[in-house]
Length: 211
Ligand SMILES: [Zn+2]
Image (cartoon, rainbow, N blue to C red; front, side, top):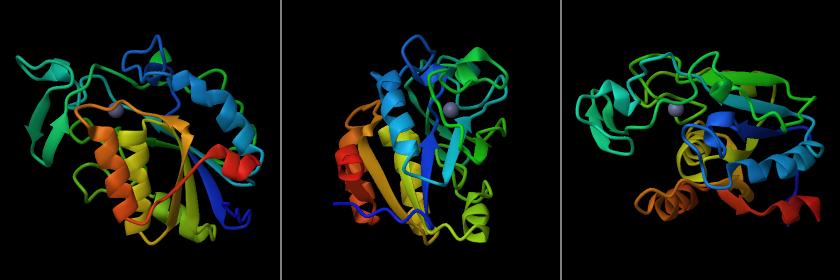
């Protein structure tokens, strides 16, 4: 059983945006299926924070910006390896909007990430150069929030990176597995769970919270 502390836990809803759902440009299989469950879970948390992938047009994580590259190719960018994606979550576009079924009236923060043209940011804490911080750690600390409980898209990229960075920054982290969906690119899902376990991320199911 998973014990929630409403004072110090925050639900961190990762990238539940149109482009990551069926019909979007970087569709995660079953991505929209998590929406009703996240809406239910959110009632348990006095503190709800939301992230949005938020790229300028021509972002360097887009395959379209690299000659001869196709989506899902692996490239080397100045900060390291980078999966190249279809154009997605372009600032101000329909695809970048949160899924319309998401009903989180109590959400307190919408944190946008990936807005620098040359650096991607799977993580809600720090960008892919591993140096540039988003400000989330400071926000959590200032508010006395000590653990994040993660849900959303995609398990093996933005959720996993955020959860591991939470641990690295000194926070507790738990991922609600059935409130996430994965891309699973070349075994990335299994590798992500291994890395999260090694980092001390708790793996829980929604029934552990909802009963
Ligand atoms: Zn992105």
